[in-house]
Every structure is written in C-alpha cells, then in structure tokens.
Length: 286
Length: 188
Ligand SMILES: Cc1ncc(C[n+]2csc(CCOP(=O)(O)OP(=O)(O)O)c2C)c(N)n1
Ligand code: SF4
Ligand SMILES: [Mg+2]
Image (cartoon, rainbow over all chains, first blue to last red; front, side, top):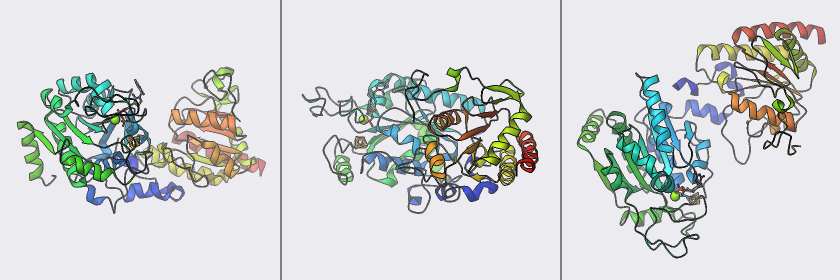
C-alpha cells in the first residue's frame, strides 16, 4: 500500500469521474491531525452507505473514518452483519472475514504487515457488530487480547442481531423483547468492556457515538496505543432504530438518553497506555 | 440473457467448462485457439478498428500512479486509444454504486453490461483490472452482450475474453501499438 494508490495518472485524469478526483484532491491523506472537523469540507472515505435511513452505525462510520490518523496505511477487518454492507463503499483496504473470525484474520494481517514492512506504520482495525464480537466471535476476540495483538477492536453494539432480523445477543439487556426473542432476554448484558480489561487490553472505552469529537479522541487514542503497546477495545452504542421501533431521526436522542445510563462514558487506560497518550498529546496529535 | 448455465452454480456459461484454458507462457488465446502473440495482437487491433464504438477500459492498476510502470502504461494506453480511435471509459475501483453507475462515464465489474449496452460497444480492451474482477466482468459481458472482449493481462490471462494476451507490460504495449498502426493502414 502507498498513498500513491490514490493518485490518478495525469494521462487518464480527464476520463475519471469527479468523485474519484475529489478522493485524491479533497480527502485528507498523510495528515495525522485529520478529524471530524474536516467532515464538512473534506471528501469522505465513505461514498454512500446501505444501512437503514438514520441508522446510528452510519454516523459511527463517518466519525471513525474521519478520525483514522493514517488511513492510507490502515486495513479494516469486518464481519458479517449490518456493518459489512457498508464496507464495499469504503475507499480503503477492507477485508471481510468469516463471521466471528475477524480478530484472528486481523492478527494474521497485522503480523504479516509487520514482517513485510518493518519500517512502516500499518494500523489494523477490527470493526464488527456485537453478535460477531461478543457472541459467535468471542473466542477469537478474547484470544487476540490474550496474545497481546497490536490491533484495535471496535464493536458496534446495537444490542441485537440486526442483520438477521432481531435475535437477542449477549449484549441484549435482560428482559428486552425482540421479534425473535419473544419471551424477553433471560440473562444480563455481557459487560464486554470489562472482559476486555481483564483479558489484557490497554485502552478500553464504552460509550455511545452521540458526540463526534469524543469518538475522534477515543479512536485516535486506541490506535496509537495499539501501535505501540498492545490490544485496545472500543465498545460503541449504535442503536438499531429499526429493531427497537424508532424513527429515522430518533437515533441521536436514543444515544443521548443512554449516555446517562448503561452507556455512560467509561474509559480504562493501562499505565503503558498512559505513557503513549501523554507522548501523543505532547506531539499535538491528541 | 443469462440462463442457468452448464457451469454448475454459475448462472453464466464459463469458458473453462468448454475446455478453454488460459494460454501457456509466451502464447495468446484467440477464441479457443492458442496462437502466437503477434497473431492475437493483429486480430485484436482488427476487432477494435472495424467494430462499432471500440472502447478501452483501464482498471485501477493503470489508472493510479502507484509505481513507475503504471505511469508509463497510462501514457501508452492513451496512445493506443488514439491509434485505435477508441474511447476510454475507466473502471476506477470495484465499489458497488447505488442506484447505479453513470454508464457513459464509467464501468463497474458488478454490472459491466450496463456500460456496454448503453454505449453500444462492440469491441473492448480490459487493461489493469485486477484478476478476480476482470474474471467476473468478462464472464458477464460474454454472457450478456455481443461485445468482442480483449484482455491485456499482466498475469496469466483470462479465458473468458475472446482474445487474451498474457504477461503484458509496457514493452508489449509498445509492440501492440506498432502492430495496431500497421493493421490500421490495412483496414482503413
Ligand atoms: C458463520 C456464520 N454464522 C451465522 C451467520 C448469519 N449472520 C449474518 S449477520 C448475523 C448477525 C450479525 O449480528 P451483529 O454482529 O450484532 O451485527 P449487526 O447486524 O447487528 O450490526 C448473523 C448471525 C453468518 N453469516 N455466518
Ligand atoms: S437493521 Fe438496525 S442496525 Fe441494521 S442498518 Fe437498520 S437500523 Fe441499522
Ligand atoms: Mg448487533
């Protein structure tokens, strides 16, 4: 990979559609200070999305993609679910893994890149739903934490298997009724952020994506810590407005409500991670 | 239109099931026949120079300036288009687009037939499209259109194209341009 893969050959430029020229000229490349404040001005790395109208996952995608400090050298591994339908539209290298295998696949990619490009910074990020991260893929997720893989794992927690029509997941709240969980969930929500800490993650956050600036900050911290120390984990509330019966413009209010309760901002930083974050702040990158 | 073909799960007829394989190194494929590279280049030039709306579809490997060879190839493709009096319609990347692409300006591997139909293209050249997407797109074009497809491939070639030239790099492109100039004198 190289930033040159976004540079269009002059000889062919006149035949290239404007949005692709914009991607070269108006997207933010090679600038670790890029962030959500660029959104109104810069070309986004997501051309369009295929989620339900107003789905908070689409907001989360936009904020995360705007915040990557090194997009030209970032690979995102995803898993099956609503999120996976968005990945083909992203103008970065993304890899679709078998459902639940995402952290194992990311491990292989990260290790290979370290071996192949020892002098280059390559960020590997996993981005998957709660079903993929906390249920079916829990083994691969935790094992990658135990092994101290230098990858950032982001879970879009919509508290349900949304893409398959509303089955309860490990992160569904106790008592919640879904189309295919008619009796209500019998057990409490899995505190995945706590499991991540206990399993060796160095930077862990639980929050909703109601605040773009906050998303930018935690994404950057998680990536910088993963680069230098070890696994990091971000647990984002991205409610499935379809399955909980909200309108397209209700997503933000739903997240703000939950900011006060089960998705109250929570951040864990290990001592090594503290050092990295302090250094990046000194460098003006956070 | 596509039918449930002989190729098991593929809805399209697929060349390998008709015992058509990519050409061996140093050779080219002309329909079902393994031929010398020059022969295939002449036929390719003839197809482009005599059929309606000839078009070159450059892919990401030649559109983007990711290495020196890509820059040189872009220049040569421009020259080739001039010699063949062909249009250039790019396949900029492989992202799906909703509701659909603008078929006048681009071609997408997921529905390449839209561009071919819309522009009534009867001969085309694929160059710089990554293998798996060239494979998919050429199969769809083969099944859904009457377009004469030519693959200028830098690897092993594509049996689903009507003419496959393999191991094509800048030198081979230069050779093709020279042959195209000769053929042009003969047919025009
Ligand atoms: C190995 C495998 N098992 C099951 C499935 C079926 N499946 C597709 S999407 C999905 C649910 C995804 O839920 P989640 O990870 O929470 O993502 P969401 O759709 O909620 O964003 C399941 C079970 C699959 N595609 N592959
Ligand atoms: S089903 Fe739910 S999570 Fe999936 S796109 Fe629609 S609102 Fe978003
Ligand atoms: Mg989910």
